[in-house]
Amino acid sequence: MKNILNRFLAGAMLAILTATLTLNARAQDKAGCLAVIVNKTAKLDTVSTSDLQKYFKAEKTKMPDGTKIVIVMADVGRPERDAALKEIYTMSEADYNDYFVGQTFTGAVAAAPKALPSPAAIKAFVAQTPGAIAYVSGADADDSIKVLTIDGKAPGDAGYSLKK
Image 1: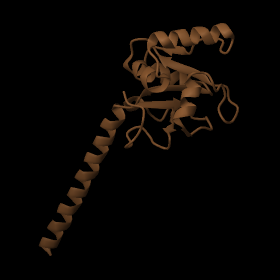
Image 2: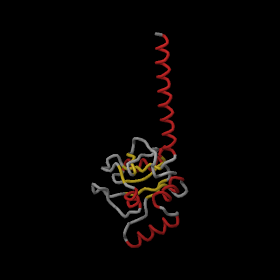
Image 3: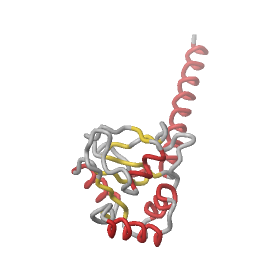
Image 4: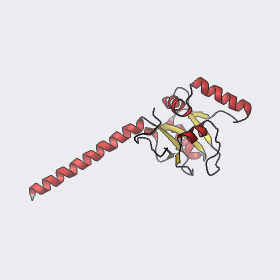
């Protein structure tokens, strides 16, 4: 009986250790990703890479439910911004600036996206603004905002496309 109990406890401990290691690996994977975030009330849960680029480039200005999109960027020099320019916009900082100057000049947009200084400021703005769409490091995502899946994958999932 004692031998059976010892085997059970060893098996339970192994299961707990495996689960802990898996969760830690996923948390580390999330930290290496950009999480695209929206207001919790948004009727948007998943987006294709193509639509994501259209939202951030202001080519699509409304969410599927008709809510006007408010684009939020991290301030210049933040690693998340550099990753977003590379992974979402596929532009350099100079190309991004030229793009939005042109979009503003033609009247396609009223102004370039709002830039905020920190993940906390970005999350606070998104949490208070229906229609806001932004990005933060996967490690900074929390329950104050909604994290979108991209092409059906969440930050930290194998094959997730937005890496930092």
